Structure formats: structure tokens, C-alpha cells
Image (cartoon, rainbow, N blue to C red; front, side, top):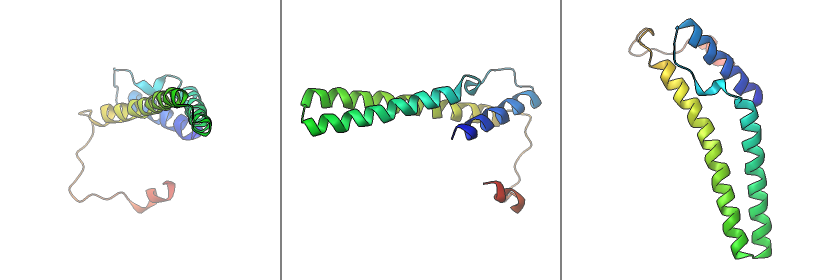
Length: 112
């Protein structure tokens, strides 16, 4: 996943330069570091939830659920930042129109 995020970051930054897009993008931040941190937080929150359920500690379960929610929101926000960047770049006026019925050439399906 980290290499995919780094490749995406490089690709989006390349498009920003090529298309002369002046606004900044969210993915310029340390997306890989954030992903690693958010993933670890999510893993820890789910482990905490499992432990509290085993102990049948109702108050601790509620706290653990809140941690799962926060960790999930952080992951969601990271992906939303990526979505926002892609949409912003894709909506630039400098792109050609996509012809009706256009299909990606088969040579691109190998990289998927």
C-alpha cells in the first residue's frame, strides 16, 4: 500500500506541474506516514475493542468503540483527501473531452 500511495503522490504532482495547476493538493503531505499511523491506530483500536468485549467491561467497550470510530474517520479522511485531489485535477479545463464510447486501450489493462 505504501508504494501505491507514493506512486499516486508522484503521479498527481506530475500532473499538477504538466497542467500548470496552481492550487495545492492534499496528498503533498506525508500521506505514507499518515497512512501508517492511521493503520496502526485502527489496528490498536480494534484490538482494544476485542479485549474489552472479552472482559465484558461495558464502559471500556464504549470507549473502545469511540477509538474505532476516530481511527476509521482518520482513514476515511485520508482517502477523501485523495478523492478530492483526483477530482480537482480531473476537472481542469485543459483536458480533452472523452469521446462517447471510448474504452481504454488493452495495453493499459496489464498495469491494473
